[in-house]
Length: 253
Image (tube, rainbow, N blue to C red):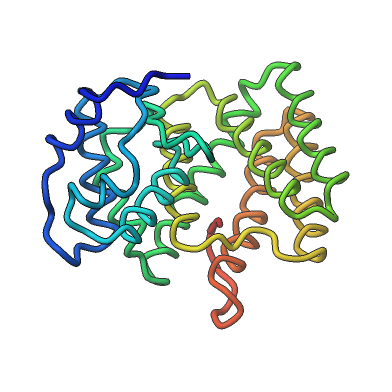
């Protein structure tokens, strides 16, 4: 377990400084993230306790708690119950700005962001089909099987769904594309965690993922892209919620 030296805590506290009473959690998260991306705090460093961060930033503990929760969703920190919060050290330099977008998105802006994600997922499906080795195709099939087996356990289902898309992105051999997809997916989750919500959603998602997998296994990049278009439209309609019409373009949740 990483050490938690007092001088490291003092360094973090001194670097942050007060923000003024009533600052929103988005501002707290952005300030923390700006410090982390400077590179002065080593990966694995344990952060000061919540109460100390609140005192240092001159904000309520609830603002710190919400900010840390958002940073955990974005994969910047690792919250370990009974131990503390640790810096993972993989924050992108772009995240200070994109984090503020993610925490203040309205439905219109979220739909626009989802359209970008959809287009990237479609491109990733096409590119992965051309580059995915047999071992990766086998892993992709494994993620699909986990989705089928965990259809009654929505939490496990969503994780298998995520791993399916991650396998595709990693198989593009394009780190920029992978990073963009991970960042956008995280931002959408910060705004609204509307993943698969019931058995019907799960059933449809399995059908759509199966179509993507079969096209990739057959080496048909155009069919894989077409199947992903269908999936992104469905996911986009789910993200928009029942009060909004289905998407007409490649969206994603």
